[in-house]
Length: 124
Image (cartoon, rainbow, N blue to C red; front, side, top):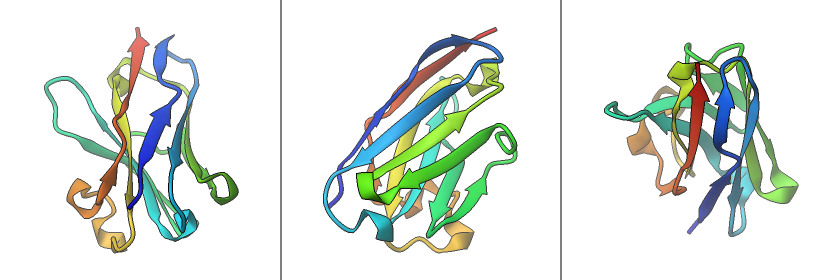
């Protein structure tokens, strides 16, 4: 069982930067594939980025602007976001999976554990 808690959301102007954190409870954090998803108002939840044993994957919409990283000693994953746009406004949630295969990284159904989400609002 893994419990995830996100932090770092907020309100900022377009073009700004923000770092989200996701801290996990329990052991074996390093064994989990960790991911970020987001859900904008009126839209379905979408994949943002994932870290699978050190390999990183990004949605095309954030590639080059967002960076996922993790500190296994701290049981924490990060999402560094830069050049933010109003389209990035969403609730950002972290997720964990012990068994997801690479081809399913972008599917929220592949993740068993979820945080409560943190709001990111980008004003244009």
